[in-house]
Length: 180
Length: 269
Image 1 (cartoon, rainbow over the protein chains, first blue to last red):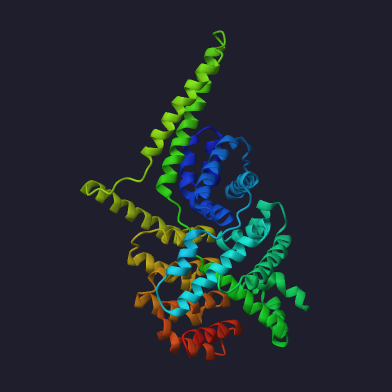
Image 2: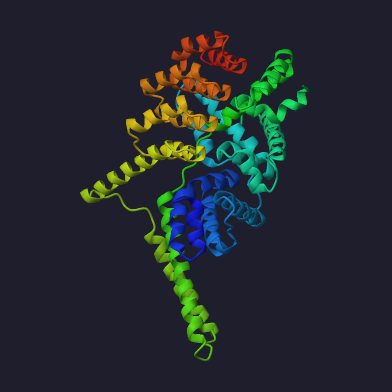
């Protein structure tokens, strides 16, 4: 059964089908929201919010769209509401810091782990819309067309914006001190 | 071709997904433009560094229990509101008094706390039935992973690769399927994800050899760079001979050779 079929069933009143959609999509959603907020607890709560909103606004689901596109639009709204209430995340998650500083092993692995922490810091320092593009393309594996459908922009615009975001990330990375 | 034209197409160039004529134009430009070559190298490196970041794992069982409770509450609420609307059409309307609202809120709080305790992770048990169930669940998850890896859609296969990293003790079939995905999957993102997923098995000699053997067959420099990083991480100083060979292989993309050279410096050559 496709996601679209399941969501149509939910819209027509078979709400239990939402459980299958939760099982299929809670991980990528958590990944997206965790990388956007940097807060594991908040990301778990926001995943719940996304699914509750999908239940509440199920009548707005249209037959002609991909389920994932609709779901990520709702996830963006949920995240925007969260940032309005709590402010945008600007910190590196604790577990990454642990990974960078306590991992045993050869010096080059330690150096790599430190680079990773700097990269995370640089990513978190980007403007929210830039970070979102990188998370969608790099971590969700979305094409420019898919991102465009979620953001309401054409693929070429996404391509140019994504290139700009990547360039800003490189600049931000070079600015983070090496000892961090 | 201008330098500014390259930027938006750089990832597609690195992924090897551009049409041949465009690819030839970019290669011709890169052959004469050091600044753009540096730009390509830096982007490739950044892309792979991003991919090496650990994937956060959600507490799926707890989240699912919470969601099931919320879903059941929503379904019950819907049924109740239907009953209320039916009864209110026959009887004078029942108005909620403040004391009723307070009692309702208190009752909901008690239910919420009880539910919270109920959905806490279970205390480890030694019951053989539970052990058997866990084993069956593990097998099912493994089957789901293998089945996702065979799907037509690249996003489904990507899900399969990601699911594999959530298996606690994946069997050799999963590891072989990941190696197979790395060798043959037509989608660059899926192949990249499989390199990341194979990192947990980099202590296995068969996996290390599999990655080394698969490297020259790769067409995408992005995947090749990720594989160079994998080899470096897996073998450390023992990777010298492989890195040396890659650094000198003129058939490889310049960014890949540069990464191998940097790796050689890291392991102290």
